[in-house]
Image (cartoon, rainbow, N blue to C red):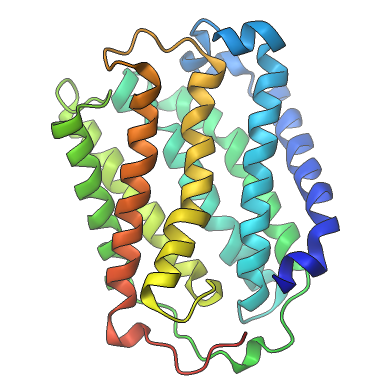
Length: 284
């Protein structure tokens, strides 16, 4: 893609800036602020060390986010700061919401988890700002006449995510607070679905593809799917999750990745089929 070909050398610098920001924030908000990090280390973390393992997974996740933002920002209309907000806000909100899943699923207190979530919310926002103001945009992007999808598209994606998640809770029975903390589980699931829906709304004008299914694949499988895979695998890579009743433990996370990505794909495909979302001209 032209966006990555023109900007690839900037991505390591952007990822490094986000990592340094996260390290600085961890001096203010240490890991012990989150009860999640009291879990025993996994065999991988015991072999290579918890900090190196965490650094590798976080760096890979930041790299995926930066690459996705760069591709999307290539076609986003507006000035550099507008593109920075459109790129940074969606992934920041999704990451913060993902961190808070430990509240309903593991019974962790909300305040400390929210505080710790800021150590990722801010670095991801930094990635969005740097991508928006530093990377090049397509010279032909003014030929795109996409209109940002309205709130209906947001709710379609959120409803699809909600349906997929409750299939995971009730049918596949992945680890969750579905039975023990049903109200908190519903609030978190809806909030996460809305965060994904808002990401679709903000990023839609820059998503590659000219058909609903192509754009749904790009957003659901690539933009969301790759990020969500690394996000979900963070915990089993770093910590011993054998206390989870679901066996084998790793499938608890694999099912989440697959079903969530499929639900987002279906939601975006459905939203893209609405007449208001049909593109008139799309730059290549």
